[in-house]
Length: 175
Image (cartoon, rainbow, N blue to C red):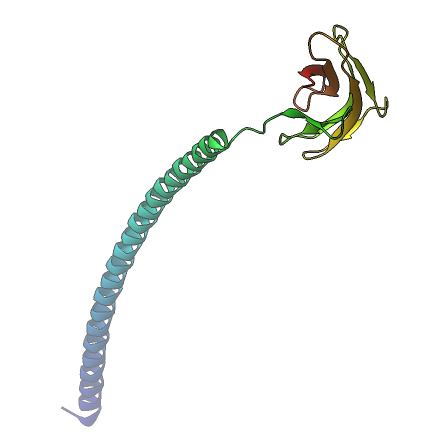
């Protein structure tokens, strides 16, 4: 065997070893790639499961929020119903011998309020003013009442109902 054959043999053997090493490295890389692919699929599956769980929990939280809001609205409604209703109340008070005032002793303001005598009143009622005005809670209108004989005179107060907006009236006896 001559030296050229030996060189060819050594080069062939070196190429064989290099090919074997390359094949082994490729196999290792392929196995690593398959493992990485499997891990990626597992991670993707776990991610999908986590996303689905998050969507489910989000829907449950949203439903709970809606129930809470409805319960709050119901609680507010019940609280409003439990509040005392504003009351409308007028009271006649004597200021002097024949001078009186009709006091808004309630919780509501009354617009277009004016005092007059009742058509059936035996006494004479004369208001200080015949101009309608707003009477706030604690405010009053004044008038004179003269009582001659018989039943006590009746004062009539006309005003705009705060709830309906309609003109209405009530009558109170002057004692």
